[in-house]
Every structure is written in structure tokens, then in C-alpha cells.
Length: 271
Ligand SMILES: Nc1nc2c(ncn2[C@@H]2O[C@H](COP(=O)(O)OP(=O)(O)O)[C@@H](O)[C@H]2O)c(=O)[nH]1
Ligand SMILES: [Mg+2]
Image (cartoon, rainbow, N blue to C red; front, side, top):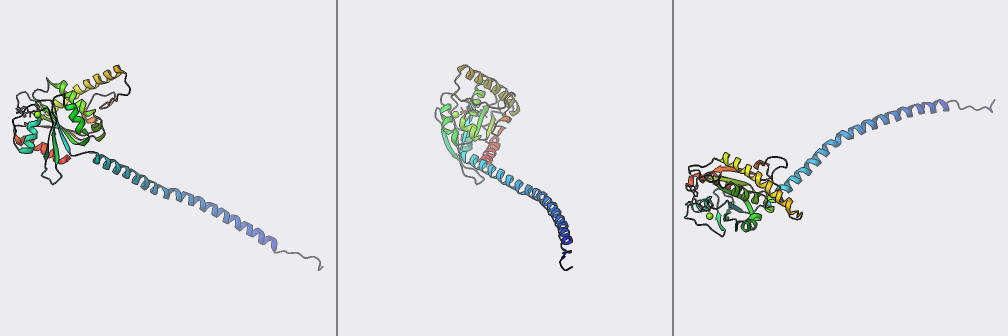
């Protein structure tokens, strides 16, 4: 009798333990699933913040580098006789001077009444023999371009005017820095002067033609190394609003200083 030794209580305890362990395991699995879900939700906020900070940094770098590449020169461009020298002397000295067709550029400091650092006004000669060199020399330091148009003769001279504008807008430095441009429709006091809206329409149509001629010419020469800058949008009529730089239009009669107030304001804004 004493030989038989049965350990009765062992089995049920083990099985009940097993049962508990299964329950615990189930609970752990459930919780870890729930946890994984929680981690996914928590991650979205740091990702959004990270991407946001990244984009902001890129934007700041872009704005900073863009700002730095603009110099302090405001270029006064336009074909001969449009009124550039008259405008320059009105702005700098407050009076129109007797002018002659200049072959060299004139550069004058122009202080602003809003406390910003002075800019320099550069009178770029209109003659197409010289203007190329002067534009090349100053395009890198251009803060802005004031392009003067004789609104009275613009219809007759539209090809010359559009070619000059196309030349400026395809200049490498101007493409890279995108200085703001003011197209100043001058000589509004003359009999047949076109308003700013009409001048814009004429110029956009003619630049479209110049753009086509230039790309055909380049296709003919077959020199791939020569860089060709296409301005505006491909497969669409040329519009100044499609350019990388801001283009504004204003009207003036440069012989009357009062009419240049809006030009002064424009220069103050870009300085
Ligand atoms: N009627 C009129 N004549 C102007 C005006 N602005 C300039 N002029 C005259 O146009 C001629 C050419 O001006 P100028 O400043 O030398 O042009 P630039 O060749 O572009 O420098 C001069 O006789 C100026 O007196 C204007 O708004 N109205
Ligand atoms: Mg001049």
C-alpha cells in the first residue's frame, strides 16, 4: 500500500497554469497589435513637422541666395530716344536736362526717401552697337530693370523694342536672378501715345515673333553648344506673366516730374 505514491495535485495545477498563460499570451498579442497601431498614428505628426521644417529651410535658402545675387544697380534700358536720360536726370536732379545720344553708360547714385540703402541708376545707351556690352557688364549686379518705351512711336518701332526686350530677357544673369522689371510707357503727353495696356499687347505679340525667329535661326545653325533660352511657356502664346520675373507697367510723361512719382514708388519698393 505504501508503495503507491500518487501526486494528484500536480496535473490540474499545470493545466490551469497553461490556461492562464494562453490567456496572457492572447492579451499580449492583442496589446502589441494595439501598440503598433498607436505608433503609426504618432509617427504622422513628426513626419509632417520634419517635412515642413525641410521645406521651410529650402525656401529660406532659396530666398536668401536669390536676394544675395541681386546687386544695387537699377538699369534704365530702352531704344534710343525713348526718354531714359530725361528720366534719369529727373529722378537724380529733379529736372530734365538737354540730352544727346550717348555712347557710354552713365551711372548715378539715387537715394531713397524710405531709409533704404541707395541704389545706382545706370543709363544704358540705346544704340544696339553698345547696349549689348553694357547689359553684359551690369546684368549681374542688376537689382531691377526699368525699360522705357516711347508710347508715341511704339507701333512703328515695335520690332526694335521687342528685340531689345527679348535680348534682355534671355540674358543668362537676368534669367538666373530674375530682377523685377518695370516697362515704363513714356511720352504719354504726345498725341498718338498708346496706353500701357495697348503697349503690353503690342509687345507680347511681337516678342512671340522674335521668339519664333530666334529658335528657327538656332535650328538652322545646328550648333547645339550655343545656349538658347526659351522665354515664356512652350506651346503657348508669349505672355509676360509667364516669365520668372515680375513685370509691371506704368505710364509717364518724363518732362513733367510729377508723372514720375509712381516710378519713384516702384524703385523704393524693389530697393
Ligand atoms: N513729349 C515728350 N518728350 C519727351 C519725353 N521724355 C523725353 N522726351 C524727349 O525725347 C527726346 C529723347 O529723350 P532722351 O531722354 O534723350 O532719350 P534717350 O535716348 O532714351 O536717353 C528728348 O528730346 C526729350 O526731351 C516725354 O515724356 N514727352
Ligand atoms: Mg540717352
